[in-house]
Structure formats: structure tokens, C-alpha cells
Image 1 (cartoon, one colour):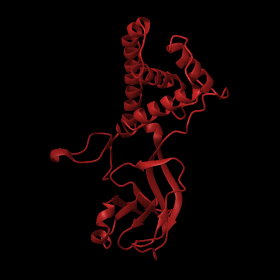
Image 2 (image 1 turned 30 degrees about the horizontal axis):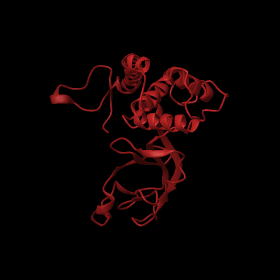
Image 3 (image 1 turned 60 degrees about the vertical axis):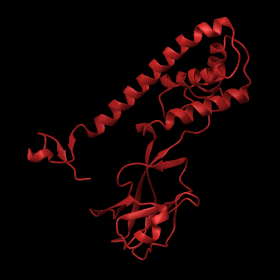
Length: 234
């Protein structure tokens, strides 16, 4: 549903009573923040390849990530990798910013300055190449006045957009006095909201599992890898 349809849905859940559009927008953004930070949703995963690094790079060489749109946080054990465009890949794991001096000579590690949005690669850079930065994004703000498009909560599928309405009106009703009708409807609305949320989680679980179902990262207990699985070591 687009923004205006979502706003109408929120008003309908409110028993048809008017609700300030600015307040409704803030409640929707609160709902989005709660949902999007609950897990590493598959549709919020991205890999940025806009940054490069040279062998002359030092532990003091800043690489600006503030230009990456809607950057939320890194994900994965080795979220930063250098790729030379052929077959060379160097993996980098994150270490604490406050321990920067202790790790400055430790290769295959990096620190991230949350304040400036810069990362710094520690140790010697083995070869020049493109940085593949695995990260999560947050979705753009939803304009509740917009009548364009069919899905305001991109990249989540449109069929889950109602979840934002249930969250928003649940927060709203929990913060004001409500009449007997609203009181009776709240448990039912909560049940529908949780059912829809569980459906969203199940949908994402299946997407995540499909990406790893045919891989086997380790030889467990010396019994060998699973038949037909691709062996990966990171």
C-alpha cells in the first residue's frame, strides 16, 4: 500500500476517528525502527562497492562511509573485503575503535569511527582493489500523503505494510484514553499484528535459509561435509 492508503488504514483502525497526520507519520517511523532493528532482514542487506583501496593505504588512511545511502551497520563476521577483480580476496573483521592503537599493525582488521563515518584498515594492505562492504540499510521515511506507487515500505513486500498500521495504532491507543469499543478491539488487533509479524519473520527465515542451504562451512566432528554441499571456509 502507498502512503495515503496506509494513512487511511491507520484511521480505520482508529475507529474512523481522525488522527493527526504528523503524529501518524511519527508512529509509523517508530514502528519501522522497531521492526527493522529486530533482526538482519534479508531485504535490508546490501554490499557497497563504491570504495577502493591502494597498497599505500595506512592505518591512518580514512575511508569515508558517510556517503553510503541509509547505512545502518555492518553485518557478518568479515563485513569488509578487498577484491582485486580477479581471484584475490582479503577478509577484514571489525575490532573496537577504542583499541585502535593496539590493532594498528594487525592485518585483516579494521576500525570504524561512528562519529565521522570513516573506517580504517589496519596493518598492510596486501593488494589494491575494490572494497566489498556488507551492511544493513534502513528504509526511507514514508510520506503518508503520497498516492503514488503501490508499496511505501520498500524493499519489504507490500503485503506486510499493514503491520506498520497495527504497530502505529497500537502505540497510539496505548498512550491515550480509549472507549469500550477500542478496548474490546485491542486484543484482536494485537493478535492480527503478531500473526502478520510472524508471517514476515517466517518469510525472511526461508529467504535466509535458501542462501545457505547448500553450503557447509565446516567438517563437523571429522565426519566430512554433507553430500552435494559446497564447502566454504568463511
